[in-house]
Length: 144
Image 1 (cartoon, rainbow, N blue to C red):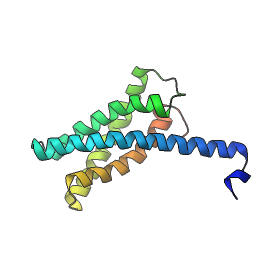
Image 2 (cartoon, rainbow, N blue to C red):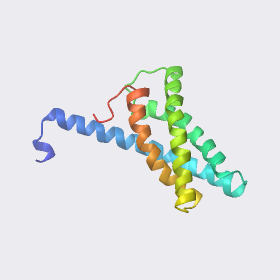
Image 3 (cartoon, rainbow, N blue to C red):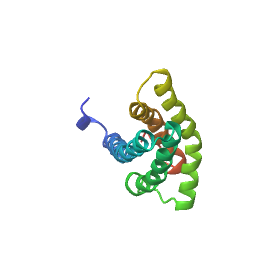
């Protein structure tokens, strides 16, 4: 069935979902580039341990990500800054071990470089983040 032949409400839901996913991913891609640059500088240039530099990059990504996602992806959500950041940090309490574990797995077990390991872990944690922030932080169904 062609998209134009579908129920207009279904098309609207699909369009909203694609738009939200595209915006969320675009913002995270920009933040991820900054995150990766920060990790690379801290680890390869300044000699900071890769897990410490990963944590610094991830924390900056999370805080700036909340404000960017609130403004651009979930603009209809009327959540306050204190409540939103609290929820974001709660989600990150689960995201941090997932991020550190997946980065360590790709780096130590699969013998990937620190940048490649961090990129792969962004895929893992990014999926978790979209679903968790949709449901918990912004109170939006991530699949609609």
